Image (cartoon, rainbow, N blue to C red):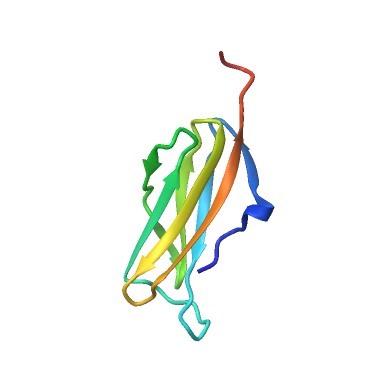
Length: 100
């Protein structure tokens, strides 16, 4: 399971849309598809959302997320069935100075 690492944390603005990526490989290291995939996001206000996951190619997936709150978002992709793997990362949304 490959996700961007927190070391290279991306920064966004409130109102941006972020495309979250997750990649899966089998034990031999080849790209492979889990039977089921879930993307889970913990927003800065502790709300949990599960955006729809889209397959880009074998083993490669994304989920789109509207960033409506400033702060740190934690997200992860998990796969079950044919490939069992999970990974987590984070992104940061800068507080806006344009609204009260």
